[in-house]
Length: 78
Image 1 (cartoon, one colour):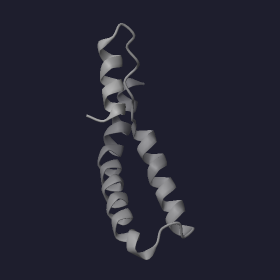
Image 2 (cartoon, rainbow, N blue to C red; image 1 turned 45 degrees about the horizontal axis):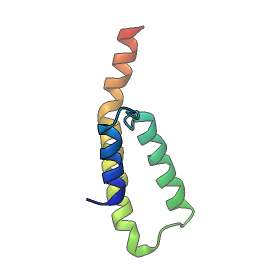
Image 3 (cartoon, helix red, strand yellow; image 1 turned 60 degrees about the horizontal axis):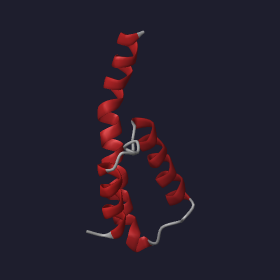
């Protein structure tokens, strides 16, 4: 186990429990926007574009799949 993982494990076992990291839909939407902007500005080399595009496509597909559900849930709660 690397040092960071070991520290995280030890902190979880101790009396002080840190809040678990959270990742929400808005974080993924921001990530999609960042990748899009970086690609348009030429931040990635040609050899990296395939990998970047693949990740972008997966995040975009996920967000498109959950977006209608999130909108419906917000409407139902209101």
